[in-house]
Image 1 (spheres, chains in turn brown, yellow):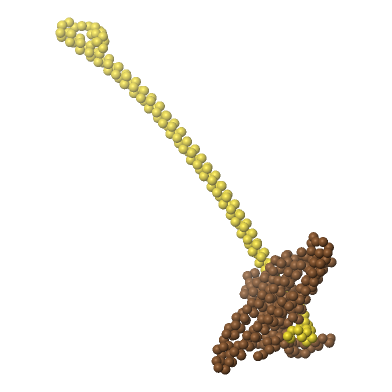
Image 2 (tube, rainbow over the protein chains, first blue to last red; image 1 turned 180 degrees about the horizontal axis):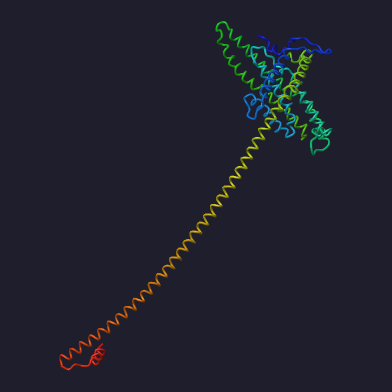
Length: 249
Length: 160
């Protein structure tokens, strides 16, 4: 049985080094690049000739853009629209990586199944939240962690907890996405292996492989759903964190 | 898990993620989304403009309708007044005509009555004369003495 973790191995395609750091072009970089190309094609075709009555591609891009804008309107308010490009970029990048990684046969790699990548994305959100928070409110931003109308000891205790939970946000954000993607891909691989091992049972070939095959098909559909939902959750949490920074409470 | 082999997977992935995300944000999303936002805003403006134009048109139509109804009401009222005035005029005119006709008829009736009275008086006079003369003739035949006409007339008048 093939190791289900093998699919997450990062393989160097072209070794590169910048200032002593290893920045090789790997299969992970390749699939991030493919995601970028796919997103670029989607966006540039969709906005090539913007018209009042949109065509198919324009309607598709508008749908996604409107989705992100509405999410920001609901969770951040009128000031949230400024961050629409950033949240949109994160959302569509995660979505593209998640979905492209599910393509079978082509040796697809899912960059978002690597905690390093999801942590990098989470840090983009975290750093943005910090910059926006201190830019808008200065040191007053720390009042985000201070409970209103409480005595000083309890307040200090809650402050500590709130501050720690604020600092763990990038980790939870990163691990949620990474864990979902990894678990899904492991599950797919395991059931895929079952198809082969059960299907090659000598006395009754192929027949026993049918059940895990059905399961794999169903799981693939579930994984497509999870790919979309996790991209949405990532963007939604990013906008909720932005709301803290913009509006405090 | 290869994911936790940070020494080997961290820097290549982070470097490429940073590079590609910068390209995505500044080179793709920032280049395309504002165009989309602009056209969506235009559409919104157009829709609200069209809606308000339709609203204004509806209001004008309502006003015209109200004016039409008001004018219809006044002209109907005027027509009603004109009809009743004409009716009153006609009634008055026919009354006057009837009155003149009645007075003319009265005058004629009075003249005719006068003529009748005259004729009957004349006829009465002629009858008395005839009666007096007949009485004179009857007396002359019976007695052989012819009475005076005046006496005969007197006795005829005394009989009636």
